[in-house]
Length: 207
Image 1 (spheres, rainbow, N blue to C red):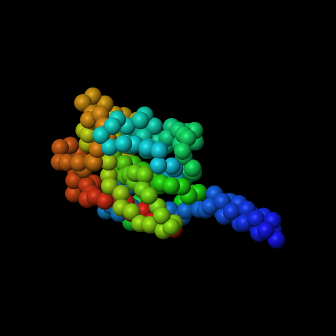
Image 2 (image 1 turned 30 degrees about the vertical axis):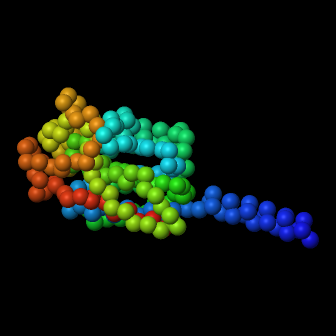
Image 3 (image 1 turned 90 degrees about the vertical axis):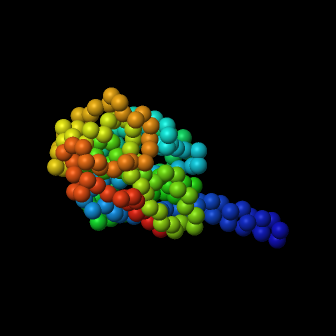
């Protein structure tokens, strides 16, 4: 009888572990800005040891590619090889103001999410290593400046509308580190009233 109980206990533990390994998060991202388009959002579940970016430190080339030109290729490659990343997904299209998208990923200890605000030089929304307990949580994510490109705010260096000039940048005199974005300032073609925002810029809901 004790042996049967022992076997049942082991079976229950294995079943529980398998269920935990297969647990899924439904991550809904809402663009809370009035007129900034967000590039296809990327969501990542990972261990506490993973940092996709760190405030006050230089952005990786992979992160800078997203922040400057909404180019996710290098970052997705990095996530696929990075120890501690449990799962990740990217939306199939941009996120217009007021729109939401839901992505499904396997759960992990932490959740990160990001996407470019496309009418900027190198600004991205970022949810940085948020702890999700019980599978239900809501977060508000601010806009970060990657610090990899000078904020000229000139259409010649802006990929999103009304400019349409991707992969053109000025890196000299860039800040050199990730920081909270100062937003759109009145110094070039971009109009703060038309293209600016107040933080937070994105809402993230996990179910």
